[in-house]
Image (tube, rainbow over all chains, first blue to last red; front, side, top):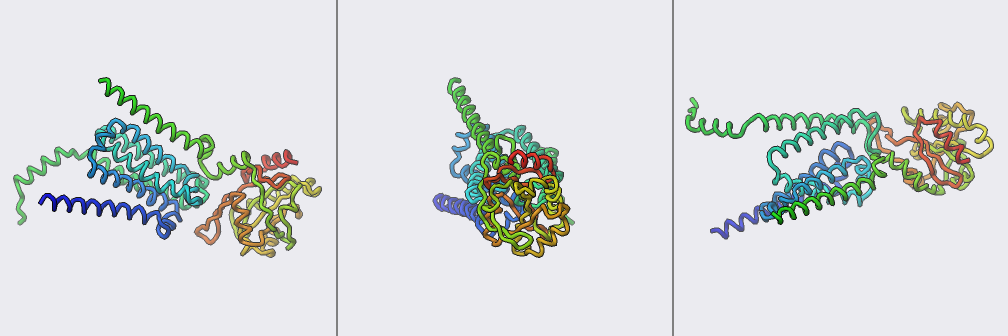
Length: 212
Length: 208
């Protein structure tokens, strides 16, 4: 029985691992990657963010299979956070975005470093952080999105030689939209107290309202 | 207690190591934190490492063939255009003709040439170059226009000069526009902002 459960678990989890690997492969391979890199908006918002998310998903899977990693990285969580933030910052340099389009080696570095040096360390750092530090990081991420949006919308010149000014302004506008949704999410997180929510839920259950 | 202090020390050293690597990588990519865009980097790079131009054939608006080998011994001010362009290339054209007027005596002595090269040679034939010059030249023929004679030459030129052209939404191109100063040995040595005529003239006179 246990054996059955165990094999089912490993099967499901290796399916997930395969899914992550496949997703990684698909978004960096020619048909889709060429299309994504055609515009600054999809290159940054879709490909770069998905690459980081793939790293986070890898972290989740590793954590499920080898729970001791989390414990072992506890002391290193600040270093992991710095590694993650530095990697993301480096890929925000406009010149590197140009090079990722022009040069296959730089593109390969991007494909490998964003999941492994940004997403993965971010996951393990995040799991070790308390609520206050997480809150600060959320706010800093929101501020960075808005700073970038402001830069892209206001800049009179193109930041990347590979992308047009209209593309850059569209990206800025899109970032404003994303920041707004992010703000609402953070507000909900901050204002809706999970304890209160669970009390309400229990009381609902104890006094069920029968639909007429 | 002792082991936790040791762990803290290790954690601090690792964190400092991460920061040091990130700092070094970023410094290398950005010319020591001075250039975050490709345009800025290219400008600094040609000063540090002058680029030898390929000896590609050029055809001028009169249909005459020449190449960079023949232009050796002159200081060149080169910029890149396409003749259908309605916005920045018109500025480039008038900038070039103004600069040619300022450098009139040097051009007449054969020491300097101001050339606008088309990066769309398939569509920009000799007739298009002529009408472009007719439209924008105020320097009585001191400024020249030219086109590479093949797409492969065009690609080679764009690569050395670091000119990137992308299709815009209106059937034209977005391109990085600047004044490229080439010394008498056919090396690209300076890149000057498009609107900085004084700087361009100063650089040309220094190289004479």
